[in-house]
Length: 127
Image 1 (spheres, rainbow, N blue to C red):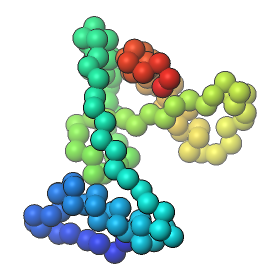
Image 2 (image 1 turned 45 degrees about the vertical axis):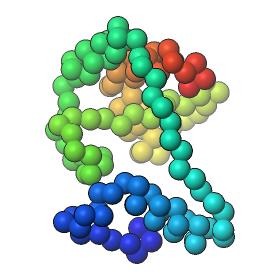
Image 3 (image 1 turned 90 degrees about the vertical axis):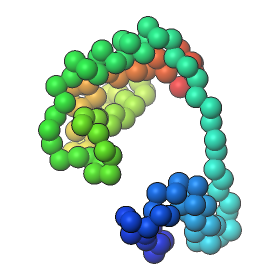
């Protein structure tokens, strides 16, 4: 946090542009002068059929009611999935608990992963 804090009722607490500029300034001050930049990307519309498939898959999930992975995410149900290991690493033994949990979660939510990946690759083949 670089020692910068805002109270929830402070009008600047939710000013994304201001917070990003402060963050970049702090990185610059604490990163031996290496500059970071803000990138603005335009979204690409998805094929409505693919979008519908992803939505149906997500609606079919019995969302777990557990401690949130990221408490600041304000959602009724969400899951954070990580890309699986590349084929060259698949045979590697998963030794730590975090990696095991991620692999189990990806298996449990494989339908969402498969549909989402299909949608993403439809607009970005290099993903």
